[in-house]
Amino acid sequence: MIKRSIYAALFVSSFSVLAIALTATYQLYSSKLFTLDSKLKEVSGIEFDKAGNLWAINDGDNGALLHRVEKDGSVSKSITITNAKNVDWEDMTQDDFGHFFIGDFGNNDNIRKWFTVYKIENPIDIKGTETQAEIIKFTFPKQLNYPPKASEKNFDLEAFVFYKRRLYLFSKNRTEPFDGDTNLYKIGDHAANFQADFVSNFNTCTTHATLCWITSAALSPDRTKLVLLDSERLWLFENWQGDDFFSGDAYKIELGIVTQKEAVTFSDNNTVIFTDEEFNGIGRNSYMIKLDQAVKKKVTKQHIIKEPLETTS
Image (cartoon, rainbow, N blue to C red; front, side, top):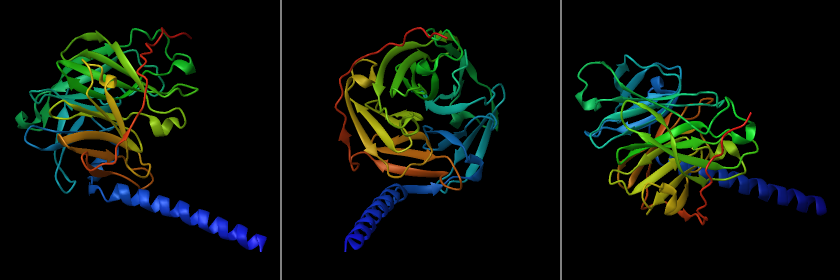
């Protein structure tokens, strides 16, 4: 009888885990819009132009190419940025005039001294299949060692947005032990060499680093909502003060199962589009979520700004 009870308990437990997994899977894939073209297996940034066309880029070593994506996921046009190189392209954003910014700032090992942002004209105005970029360079003044010691490895980047004539960068934390802080920096939006100015930080979690890494960012068209993306959730920020996005209200929105989610944007002030990379045959899809229909859990936090110290070897 005891054995039967144990087996019954194990069966109920296994069934519950399966039910949770199936619910999470449904939660993600019920919001699927389309599967992306095979040219976008490592999609790392997406953005809508002013005419409503969706554009996408791939991660590093995939060519300096910007792809226009149709509603069925196919690529209808590819533009080569002739004076650019895709070392590690990680995100896209745009300014009020529709100029696109492409962030070449992936830094897994925290060994890059200089980072690049490519600024191109509004894709609507690019008639052919080639264009040139204005080149923005920046560095982190607090980083003195390449790499810094493990506990200070917070100089990787995969997310940024344009806001009020500045570019705002969100770090992908690789500290060991993992402390969960995403640091916010700002630089200028024009061709020059900048030192990234620290603004603030936000703690996602301290348990599983790969589940808490910030991989993309987007601002709503009316500039009142910021979303950050990780592998299983959206972080939503509203009612901030000045340019400190982390000074207002924060919410998290669970997206379902874990996939390698790498790109996010807004199609309107209420609609968020995000994508995942293909990994072991899973992913390479585009998904949609309506913020007014999403389950939002408010994050209770004490806003403590911890400015990075100069790194040591």
